[in-house]
Length: 249
Image (cartoon, rainbow, N blue to C red; front, side, top):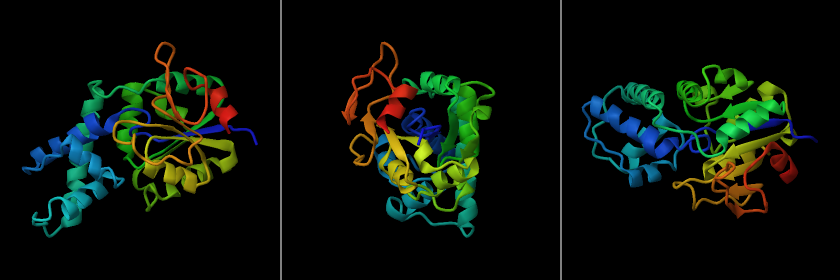
């Protein structure tokens, strides 16, 4: 069956948002709330074992800051912190502090020109997706995607397959028609759980993850003059194209 649809993860896949985006925004939110918490680069790497911002705060308190006295309305406290963090994150994006990864803008333009159907499947909040698309692509970039499956739209976040299954159901496509783009072990567990073939581009936080089930594992999508490196799989190409992805399936 012909591949007609590309489904993209966001954080770490489209842009290196985790270390210099979400982490920084979390720390700003903590400071604004009068908390002395500070998530270092190393600590944040450990917190990334859990997907979802609110879930990450809970994980931090359960494993790394067990002495913290939880307020009576703990759910409201976590939700408020996360909402504040989202505001700081969108401010960072607006300043251009979080650029797209190599090859992302080119592949997206080529995919649109080739008539590929596009979707997003991510655990980050819809507001974060909107901010990134507008700041890094174009003001109307949301309209490029038939479905933006984000945040709490499904109850079980990655590594559960629900977000991908939801996106495909909304588009009325089968797994055989789709290729997913991911950057992490939780991400590929989610996509493969939905029976999707997956292209992986690693980052500093995910370079040691298990990507056994990937079509190909790359350091980046690459651009002319900024070639990709193939870490697992086979390709002599310098950068990822629509035709290359289709040839891998």
